[in-house]
Length: 178
Ligand SMILES: [Zn+2]
Ligand SMILES: [Zn+2]
Picture 1: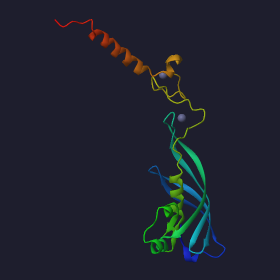
Picture 2 (picture 1 turned 90 degrees about the vertical axis):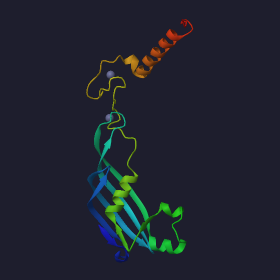
Picture 3 (picture 1 turned 120 degrees about the vertical axis):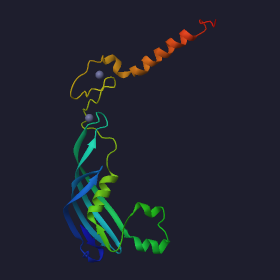
Picture 4 (picture 1 turned 60 degrees about the vertical axis):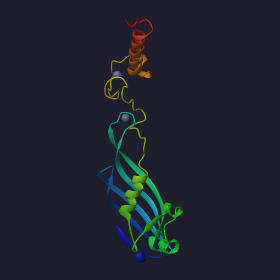
């Protein structure tokens, strides 16, 4: 929803809307509940954004959908004013939001906040058992026949090591040329 900043009344306005947002290249619906206030030229946005986000489990690599609810407490300044005062936007001001041409867009704010706060390491469940490092079976769905004792050591590397050590002995000082 686009809002004209100059038309925000003294007491502020409440926004309660569903807006499409694109997250991880997929479109989803976000529920936006904002209270928008003005303080001089600054626009204050407070409330929550909620969306069902499609995430990838860091342990078993399965995709799953999780409802994310995010508190929002942001200040937006008119970008025109910043440019006038400083000539360019300084480093410090980059932490603040800006609005342009007397307009803020709650849908854009919602998707920005969701994108900025996408959890990087997520698990489909705390109890996720992940994937067997040896055979690649999803241990949530099926057990595997790998001996549990070997699960902790990277067995492939052990095999390689043995292979190379074996070769070293073959080509070592015991071999004579001629
Ligand atoms: Zn998982
Ligand atoms: Zn296995």
